[in-house]
Image (cartoon, rainbow, N blue to C red; front, side, top):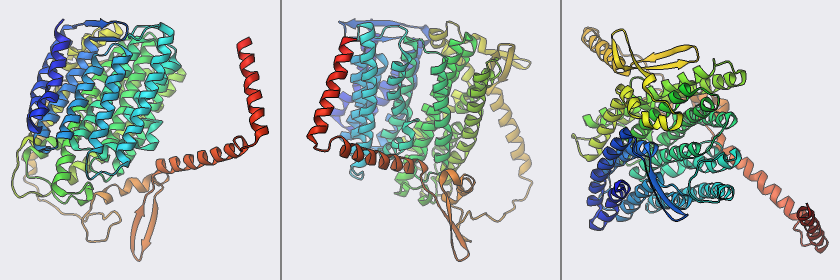
Length: 626
């Protein structure tokens, strides 16, 4: 009975502490959200469920799904608050809106009625607007873009809520076979927050997130997008979407993942590169959501449970690693005074900085045995299994989506190695600085590492969440084999039996063993320097971050619209944003159509106006009579 008030009290504590100063509010947030994370983990393991309603419009509750996501988000908030104690030294407005955004997301997770949900969603959006708009170095466009798309997402959710209210007669979340068109209408609002297609072509998310404070970018990319994934899952739990709905989610996810990874690899902005990576991860999570819906509707609860477990692993890995990557980019930006990666000519000597940066980068590259690698393995395994279940259209879709996911995952290695490689080389600072910023970064890296090697135990821990959706536990996913003891092996099963296995802990063990052997043996070899491919920059210059991605720009010149330019014997490339050119083209066509319609219909002609009134009148009469 007291659990929900307890969680709300802990979540609002940083907002209250803001009255005593910026640093006390961040310190309070680091402590209070650590307690929220631990409490949520306990509640999830216990399968705790509670529900409270006050009238027809206000209802809150908690169940394993809420507890699972609250544990992930609260962990990120605790890390981000620790980071902020050093990052933000005196901005009251920034700390207040930062803490309000987190409190709003807690209410969103606990909400069980549309008025409460929409209030939390809107508060989260407005807080995000101020996190961008209150920066003196930011112009009016980025916060305006964030607000426009935030309000558009709210309108989509209002439309869905209104339609469901007309169908059910209540504002409380109730289970029902909702129309898939209405459900997809609301989920479009969540798509906006994730920055995925069709809203990806406007690239609003990289623009807005790239201009926020670093702790604001962490909230946007690591937690607001996760809150959107939670919201989609919540409404899927309330409804009964079919195969077409799942196929749509998979298709949108594949397109978003592939193109976001391509643009992330070529980005030179320390915050826009991780923002594109967020869209890529959002696409991967949509693919898993779609696969879960398809498997559930097709009568394959085992595959559905595996897909949902993969989604939860991916959400955890994405949230932690993206939190760490933005911390890494924030330190880069603060040290160099420039948001451009190519202007960063040296890294920090800090062990915390380098260790945290490489762990988070490896995870976001989708490499084993870190959390992102386990999530990507489970994603591809799910698609492989769906491709052989005997349904030809589904097999084709799963194959195409799997190819896009694999290609996007491969390209993501370019972007992650670029930001870490150019962000950590050399010695930019004169002495080691192991402050709160670097400590939080290292903790995020350690957590995403542990989320990988101990992912089998995490999958067992989220069994109540999976049972809530599928009715079966995750016990069948975890096993043992040969020298691998029970509990350390993750298995996937098709309709014909065991499909694939991986043991993250033993992968890490073997990597450490063979790496140690190579280090010992490798010390006997002499170092050999080779000429560096200059990638289009003048001969003799060092290979910078722009030249690093030139091979990709040239390989995909039709997508990047790359044009080679020559001045004497030197070559260089110019790239154009295909998405923005599409937006400009569509905008011009829309303006032209509007002007043509205006001149044809609203042309100040009395005869045209009378004709319009008569047609409208007769159409209304025919509708009423029918």
